[in-house]
Length: 163
Length: 406
Image (cartoon, rainbow over all chains, first blue to last red; front, side, top):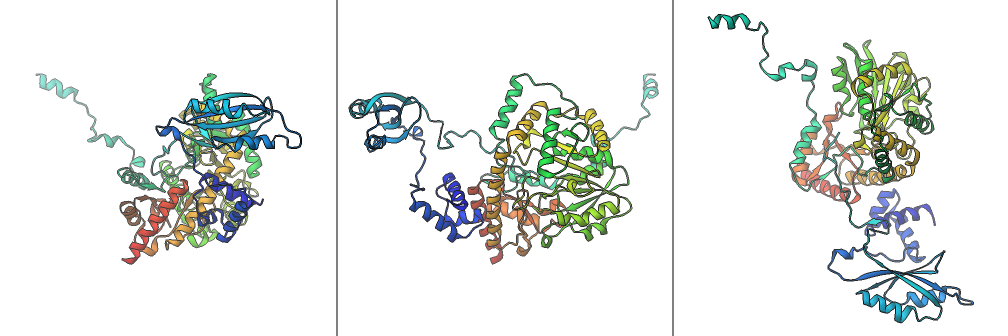
């Protein structure tokens, strides 16, 4: 990973719709250099996807999100990998992290209702042999995600012209 | 009978016709700011993208605001020492020593002021009297000349040129020096041009300052905002520390304009004089801002660097944008302003700025308000979001195209 690639990532992280031309100008490098950097980052799956951060609560949407702490027994030969894969392949699972500390996997799941989430935990997650225990926490409100504040209160309060 | 009595008590004083007759000539002589007039014009419109703002678009970093909130919570609501809290002066001394390689004694050589503006006022009031001439490289920030006039001095503009990247040329300065010249005011990195001065650029200026026994007020409020090259403080030039009043503050580097917190560093004799005026006029700078400033200096460098990098990216964007729009634009190496020439459009700065506002809804400050050499230019602040800049440059490009099509 070179410095240019890092700078490109920073700019795309802020706004994935920035064109390679704009990024090249902002970084003071050629368009080709930026295109090459982006291609390499995409190739190496460092840039995994260009997605949109959505504040669903702005819509009249009943979806619920829960964080589930999962304790598991690692498998001989596979460690946590196989069981993590078993869990993350469910489409309702939004993210899975291996954690240090009191539990092993942090699973974020999204459902259309409380009932749907509860049913996922009781019918799909808990019955997995390696799963020892689960603790489910429902998310009540998202204030900030991936460095982005959802309800920005700090608009531009400056006077329009000043010396 | 009664009439006679009234006559007896009639005042011999000839009364003034209007309240404004109470004003002094020196304040009446100050021309209203051209920026102010333009501000009124912009304020009357909607959906304007403004490149007219002379302050960061970042809000003060949260840890700095938090320090001020904590100072309030713990009851820090008193006056401080006239010169500013000793802890803050210590931090300023360390910071200036480290960043700009000038050592100041925090006990005698530093005063904390209400913005860099107060520091400039204090310095000029301490140094300038009737008959003195103040040399001011222009185009420049608009406050120096009016304050100099209030002190009874005469501001003498020293023009700088786009072909020199608005650096101060020794021969132009020399030509402006007279036996009455006393103070040279420097503002590099420059508002409005974005010009900077390097060590080599300073050398001939240092020589002139020495030869003509000038005192220098160096307004280095934009010192942290240089791109590709590190700022060289005039006070750090050989032999210049004693005859330089270094003025700076927290507004630009730490995004703290509204806190009004600045400082001056210089010779103890001059600082003592400034302190006299300061203690009788404002007593001390507000304490919560001083706590915030301590936090900014102790823990704010990373955030500051992040902001400087963001300005640098936008700087490249605007310079390219103006050039693509067909406007000549020297590459600014400091502050957050570009100063493109609009002379090729055949309009004056005022006409261009007004029509740009009315026809393209983009605000920028006409260059002529900044003095000599400003006419024919436009000051564009790039302290605004990338999206705003892209849209503004697009509008300017189309506007210039329409102008040139006739």
